[in-house]
Structures are given as C-alpha cells and as structure tokens.
Length: 251
Image 1 (cartoon, one colour):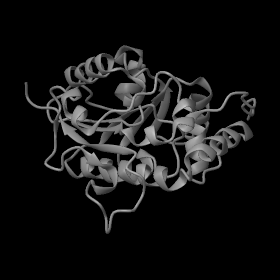
Image 2: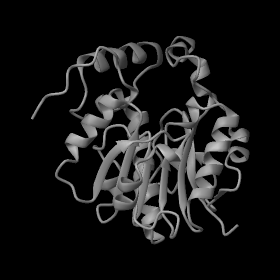
Image 3: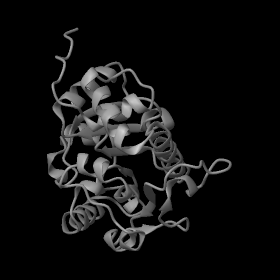
Image 4: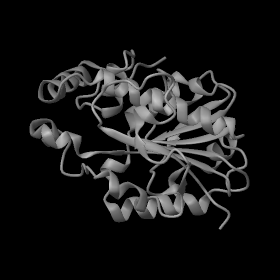
C-alpha cells in the first residue's frame, strides 16, 4: 500500500483526530493543535463531548428507523464516528480535503457498509450518485440521516440557510438532520479566534433556529451539546457548541 505523503499544512480533521486520541494525523497537525491550545486551553475534552453528541444523535436517528447516513465534513472516520456509533447502518462520508478523503478511503477499504468520497456540503450535486445510492439507499425516496457537524461556523448566514434548504428539498419526508453551531464562547480568546481565519463565524444562540429554515428541531431543541439527551450528568466543558437534531416535514 502506498503511504500518503506527509502534508505540509495542518488539517482540522486530523487535529481533531489527535485530540480524540486517534492515530491518523501528522506532526504538522500536532503542532497546530498545540499552538491552538496555547491560546485557548485543552481541547480534547471539548471534542470528546462533540463526538459523544454525534453518537447520541445518530443513535437517536437509528431508533427512528433511519439506516442510511450521509455525512458532510466527515473528517477521519474513526474514534466513534457514525459507522462505529450505528454499526448496522450504511454510511457515506464526504469531505472536500483530498488528503482526508484518501485517508478515509484507506481506513474503510475493507468495509462494505461505509464509503468515503468527495462532497461539498454547499452543493449536493458534487456527491457521486453511485456512492450515494450504494451507501444511502433510498436517498430522496425514504427517510435518511444527514450529519452536518463542524460546518456551520465556516458558512455565512445566506449560504448556510440555502444549503440546509437544498438538503431539505433533496431528502424524503421524515429525514433527520444532525447539526451544530459555534457559540460566541471563543470570543474570550482573541489569539485562538484569530487562528480560525476570517471565514469563521460565531453566532448567538438566538440566531441558530432561524437558520434551519424548514427543518424542525425535535422536542429537545437546539442547545448545548452536552445537554442534548445526556447519558448521565452532562460533562462540565466550555459551552463552545450548540446542536440538535431536526426533522424534514411533509411539505
């Protein structure tokens, strides 16, 4: 097997893998993770809770009968990612970073229930139709799960609202969406905030619901990820992310 050349730029996906205790990252990612932590503080607890929220969300979807998932901005498909959280489901992971895509394809090479390919969340047409219908059978005809985590912070309000509406239109009634938003918590750490780049968007909690458009949150609402159907006492971590699950109606 040909090894992936070591990248010279860090990747958020691989930095998160490092924080989660994974094995699929490079020295450049570790250096970037440490630099961010020097300006912010420990990140591993926050991202462990974000991954735990992902697990609770997709298991809740599976309990509603969803057995096929499309994941945008998937990152590294390990450490409790979707196919590990709901092993009986089929999953198509997508990303736009070619290094991450090739890494994901190698990790999933022996899987017949999970695949990895290119997919730009803002353009559903970029997802390979053959992969989509193999790993998310019934797409557009029966309920599926869409995972949209870690992306809203890098889309302006107009693009985010349009993207979520296009996903609403592309899915069948009863489909479920897992989504999260970055709160304004990072504003207290200006050096760390500067590292996120000019495209990064923090939002006040009151702004989250309107951006969902026609998607309707479950009764749990959109709130701190640690409080979304917690399994035990919610962890005491910074309130960096709010999230929830929303339903595609019949209209």
